[in-house]
Amino acid sequence: MARLIFSNEAHRGWMPWAVLAPILAIVFVILGGLPFELLLTEFGFISESGDFVGDFGLLLFLLLPFSMMAVMVLSWTRWIEKRSLSSLGLSNGGWRRFTSGLGVGALSVIAVVGLIFVFGGYRLHAWLPALSSWSAILGIIALLVGFAVQSSAEELLFRGWLFSVVCAKFNLVLGFIFNAVVFSFLHFSPDQPLLVTINSALFAVFTCSWALRRGQIWGVMGWHAGWNWLMGTGFGIPITGLEIEARPLLAHLLPAGDAWLTGAEQGPEGSIFCSLLFVLGSTYFFIRKDNTKAEDVEDSPPSQALA
Image 1 (cartoon, rainbow, N blue to C red):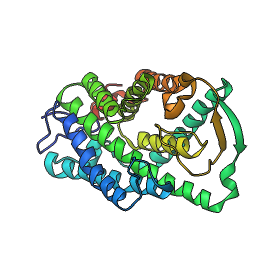
Image 2: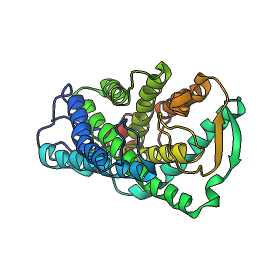
Image 3: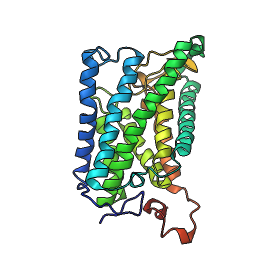
Image 4: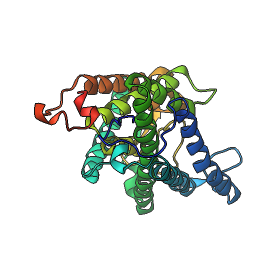
């Protein structure tokens, strides 16, 4: 049986062929999201143009489709592949790692946005605008919950399930490649700049290298949540082309530089500084040596034995 990267256990059910896994990942996304998108559109929370109607519409979108997607992935793993949560990178001690990753994700946003600001990509419009309204603060807290669900579900699907299946069936290199291709495809828009697509692929490589090095996905789930949340609510700037109506938590920034610097309509995820972050982060995890005792290597997850 194929050996899993997050656990020494072997699956006891049917694990799909590696070439089928990306197709299944896309099916999980469609079946988890499409019914709720249609429902939210029917009830007026998503406009006919595809825009969210208010932050409550966005919150419902973050909670409902992604929760369903996570349930589908967990159900498939439990009943079809017959393997445990730890084989998806969901080992014990998760909340501590998630919280730590959340903080690092928020700091990563501050670093990228700060660099763009220093190099003239933004100009300051207002400091701490959300603090003037309790409703704005409560909305931002609610969106933290929503982004935590959305980001965790994506990491469960891409880094927990897809990455582990392809690595088990093929190898680590194809695991990284398949992950980057599928993640970029599902985040692709025909009118987006090339750098945005490149950054989507680099994002996948970065998160895969983190999950592989740590032997679990809790930390990268938290990082993804902190990244999306503060990127969307902290500065009044777009996140993956999405404009959030909530008053910014830290500062209201207005774009003042070139698209390669600010990401333009796509936000900092289309910035060259975002590319730099993902390259440096991936390099760190690729070259970092864990403090694993020699006698423990044989009994450790394959991801640690490869360190």
